[in-house]
Structures are given as C-alpha cells and as structure tokens.
Length: 163
Image (cartoon, rainbow, N blue to C red; front, side, top):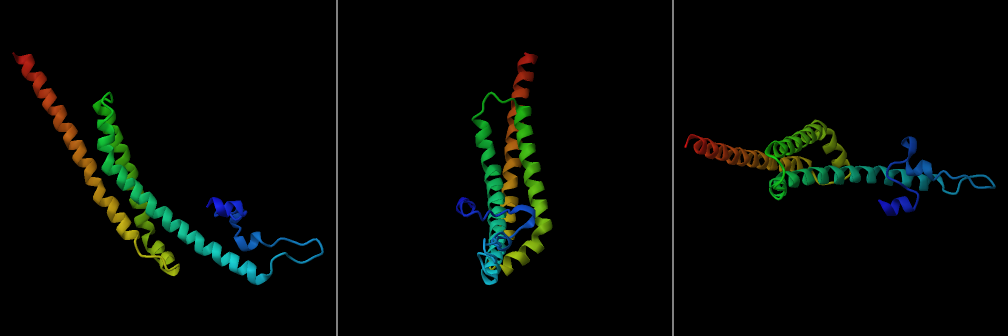
C-alpha cells in the first residue's frame, strides 16, 4: 500500500476516481501523457487491486477477531487488579464486536463471493467466518470459569461468616 501511495496511486482515490482517471494528465503542448490503452489498463488494475484489498481486509479482520477471542482470557488473567465486573465487560464487548463483524460479513457473503470469484481469488470467506464462529465458545468458557471462581469465593465467605 505504501509503495502505491509513493507512486501517487492510492487504493482510495478522491471522489471515486480510479487510477485510469488519475493518469489523465494533460501535456503542455496538448494531449495527455498517457494514452487510452494505458489508462484502461490502470483502471482495470485498480479494480483488481480493490477486490484483492477487500479480500485481505476481510480475512485479516476475521482472523484477528478470532485470535482475540481465543487469547482474551490469558490477557485478562495477567491483569490481576481488574475487578470481575470489568473482566465481564471486556468479554461482553469482544463478543458484541465479533458477532457484529460476523453479521456484517454474513450479510455480504453472496456478493463478496461473486466479486472474489470474478477476481480469481480463493473462496475462503465462509471458512474465515467459520473460524470466528469456532472461537466464540472460548469466551463463554472463560466467563463460566470466572463465575465458578466467584461462586467458590462467595461460598468460602459464607462458610466463614457462619462459623
């Protein structure tokens, strides 16, 4: 991405401008620096790269969120000073974000598959979504363990108070 921007060919051009339109640079003596075939090729490259960028972005967002679900319990366990209600808030926040992300991409899945297939990209969107779905139970497991610990602590307090 930085190399493209260094060539003044960003992925996100202004006002829906494509690379082909961006290369319509007038010459001093008239005409353009780049011919029509070059501008068409640049526009086609921009379209292909846009789909590739979307594909990589989707895959990485889903993989990162799945990894966050699997690792959150270990991260929060290291934060001993965090009260249980704050820990539960962290789990709830990550679950909401993960579910919102899956809902968004599941809704877009048919059109994503079409665009990815047209760009000859592998059909991995469903597998990426499934990876996030498989990571979600790790949040529930961590919450249940936290509740068990809190219940055991409460029972120990109640027993001591009765003596």
